[in-house]
Image (tube, rainbow, N blue to C red; front, side, top):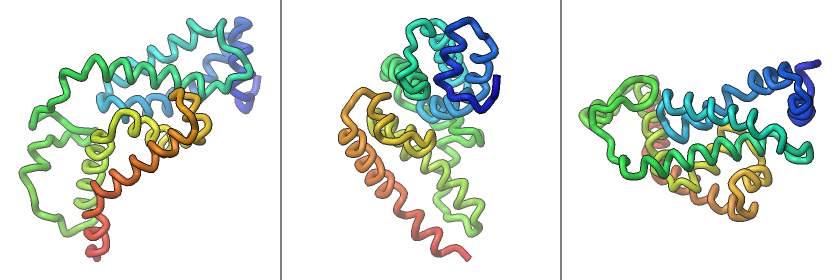
Length: 198
């Protein structure tokens, strides 16, 4: 069994009892699915949990999988639905403590709010921009954020994103356009900062 086999063929082999086929699928898609979920839920522990649940659902739903469906569309639909369910459960817990760690660098909102000085080197601006980018993405509506993440980080075509989220392709393109406009507005100040750097 080659590692270059199509996902769909591997899924059919898994349906027929070949556990090795599932291992290849897991190895191939575990990190991208984790990254997609992490960007949606912004908690490593939660992302790990939801990723495991997504692959458990692949195992449980294997018998229902039909080869004409693209495997990644099916997988990201499962992951997206888990993120949506998690988001609904967390709606009442939207406020963030100023000393709650943000992102992977462990910095807090208080750290970011407390220092209004613009750093003079690229590393400081890059770190600040990365944090601001995460905040700007988090501020998008759920619909715009999921389209943006699937397009920009998972590199799915608009047609496949439409299948994953269950809306027409033009709606997906519209959501992407609005997401990009909001991000451009939120991050506009950093374009000037970058130009001012040596």
